[in-house]
Length: 382
Ligand SMILES: *Cc1c(COP(=O)(O)O)cnc(C)c1O
Image (cartoon, rainbow, N blue to C red):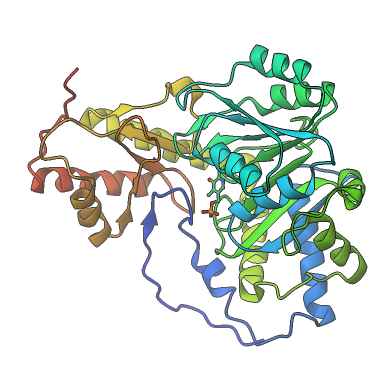
């Protein structure tokens, strides 16, 4: 195989919540001889990839499987919700942020019966209330929530919610898109039936590949549930993999090569070492922000350790776009917020970066404030 080495690719530091900064080896893994994905060689690559995706969350290969799809992470939420609800049952969405709200919209689009159990975006769900709703609605068949609400960075207590879901005979699906392969997850101990992610987030690979890791028995049972989508049906895709080793329709070929390389690097770095690195980055972000006087929207002890949601200062000269553009010109990407209540922006600890990158970032960020005449330390009117 021809190998291209030492190609210089500009290194950008992405502090947005995915896609993340990737290593050059992952970028270059996409440059491969052309191959038809219907070849046995490609099927065997996907088999290894699927097994590794189960390993990341410590699932047993007998009980759990990974099902791949071509698309962005939202597709996983769509697939889980439309495929895993038995006839005559209801969805319960535990909703304290933009990504769980997306699951509610999916229920609406498929006209599924659902309960939208809303909590404030800066608070954790009240478990007593979750229990009460499950008790009062024995027809709930699927409970869904988000592990790390990427819009704010709040961590939800999935192990506890999963235990409640299971005690009321419901399947538990968790949007782990912004924790998978970052914050350690144990699918069985965390009481998760289905989790999900896309390759460009925690795995630090490329966009276009999404995957659901979940319980095989439940997928098998779901073949008898109402079929609400064709392209996005979990059993159909799973069954095709089981029978042929292939994706039902054309897979994102080069993206899969990158994901395989990223998984190799993931296991080489190690789950705990990688989490320690993200934590270093997260702490460095906090340290830099504190020095400049910025406030967080979420209580520090509730943060998942990956997204810092920062309250925009009240300075009349504050202009997110201008600050963004200055940082972007210097190779650093910052991201707007996703809460309707407060004006925020976000800095995230995803990707192949370390604390020295954050120190470099704050040099640029500080000059972005200075050139825009924003007072340092920044101030708030209350
Ligand atoms: C990134 C992300 C998604 C997927 O969003 P896309 O825009 O489809 O890539 C879903 N859920 C969470 C929690 C995320 O962070």
